[in-house]
Image 1 (cartoon, rainbow, N blue to C red):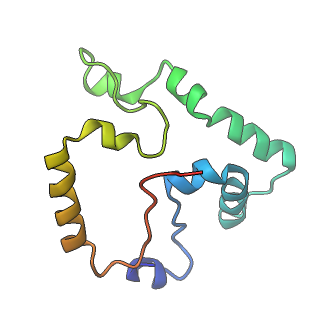
Image 2: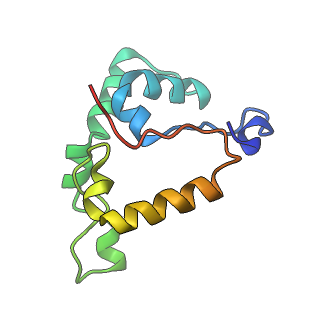
Length: 117
């Protein structure tokens, strides 16, 4: 965990997209507890449904359309863990790996870039 999270006095809720996909209900429940939002099982299920990738992608108020009205939205692509690899060449992946290891060597957060069952 990073120093910012350690020193935040509990004011930062670290949540990775990959963790949210893999354990949706658990992470939504933990977020509600962190925010001190009263919740029920129905509330959690409704949040999960309304925030599903399918519903978010179908939302006609995609913010990227406001920023770049003539371009196709890239805000929501597939909603699949690891899809980023399809956007990089082998060379770009190597460059990213080198830069990542250099810049993130002191950061104690474990990222999940792929999902294997």
